[in-house]
Image (cartoon, rainbow, N blue to C red; front, side, top):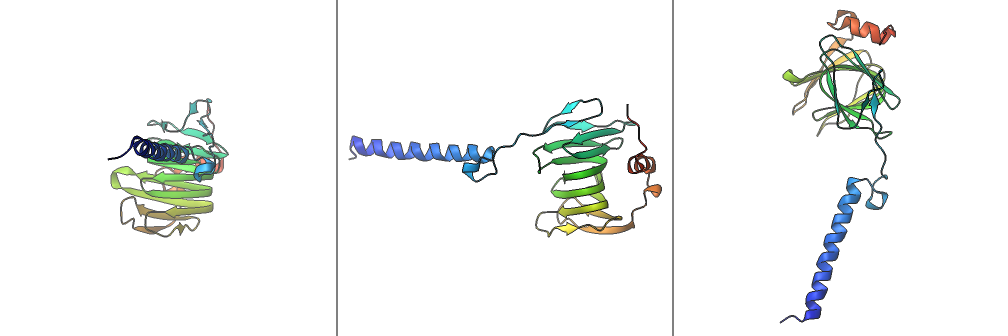
Length: 201
């Protein structure tokens, strides 16, 4: 039969383990340095031309005839019509959006998440997510663009070449030739953004 002191010692050990485990989980969640993280960083918001603020976790959608410009940190994000993006991460050096559907042009340093695929941009890249086809079309216009998928090596994209990826396993991809924005159904969108000839109210 256990003595009272043995029961108290066992209780203290169990409570200590639970407390330590809870503290570590909280530390991991907030990326605390003492829990092996990089330290908590505040998340930047994105802003459109009207200075409307979009915080992490919010979605931004364009309409049938709408063109939306977002600024996230030092990066620019242009949404073509019928496009929806979600702000995933606003920490400096970790900026990430999710392109739920539609067409974007990204200028700067940013990660684009599309289901399980991560596109890392440092330069200018256009991306189209055909959500109903489970396909992703990516063209690195200039700079560096990398695509990472689960259980695949990181793929560096050649500039001015259009790549098509499946967004579902096994994540097949192929190239579809040189990028020619003039032959695109979004030729006007590309011309406005890439030429800098765009005026927003």
